[in-house]
Image 1 (spheres, rainbow, N blue to C red):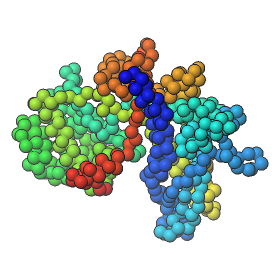
Image 2: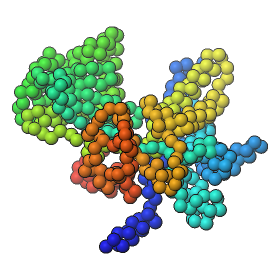
Image 3: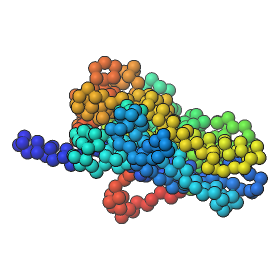
Length: 495
């Protein structure tokens, strides 16, 4: 029996690498996520328009990625392999080219492909020269055939991006707190593209349910529902539940004066302290609701009713917990967690720095136009800006949102220490706080996390390692399962 298990494990590792999930994550980032981030930027409009145009826009199109190369002192370009990058203390990175076009009065004036950055490449990924090489080929290129890859080379140093464990986005977590003025509290981290907005929903002891997000602090949730276009009390009550709860009546009575959508918007504007003219004030509230209220459900006026229905579901969840004893969420269950791999971390970094590059392009363009000089987008795109910011973050480990220690020098003490470092998972909770439940071993860790390998001391239970044979799926939902759900009546979301 033991021999048969050994045979299965041996066959698995002959076909799969234990860092396969990280490599797939990086490939997904390079192939799809990077283009998606560019598409988020799409078209930008400078505030200063050239005198020879009525309308001017800058459009970002397709992205093209080449395999790692180096430009020598004589200007010649050639491919570079990881062994040479280590010896010469170079960064093993791939050039990124972006299609940029300027639109004057709707028609393209200047279309070209700009070299915008050089992104460090993960060893053994699709964009690495080692991809597809067999045993002898790896030896010829100065590589250890047993080395799994899954790390980067920056200035000759081998760097690994640590996997980050965080709460799953777009999921409601309700807890009861006897010490708080609120009877029940729920949190949702709504995430969509560049937006990650925390929402706090609280039910006070008198029964009123409040919601807080961005500039709106503790506003009645019924007022937000009415501001979204669902204004009839009977409809709101029906969408919340078929049962008649006293809490529903209390919440509806609290906002009984808000008869129209405009009344609810005016009420929210006062709560947020907006002091503009009435039309501007209402428009500002609408824009804030579209952008920052549950952005994973959409960011356009068409998605307002969907958001209203989902807020009704949240109220129902509160009532089921309060009156029917429904089970509270277990935050430590691993279905409530999300692991951010190398590709996800690089996507966060690239998204932030892409916006920095766009702002830099706009600033340089507007400065040229104000001075009355001839302008060309080719001359104002600084390729070293994006490269240096990405390289700096990966060299220092200081990431977006103030996170530190994401990038680390790989531990090469022996093969086991290297394997452990490539599999490391770090929780975003601070090690100085107790967080007993987060540190404890949970039954859902079985087969996913190693139950033994965690350090002694303050980081115990917060720094873990994924199991050797664990495979982590990417964000994309499998197409075969999606087709089954569509056959059952699921409709794709429309913006």
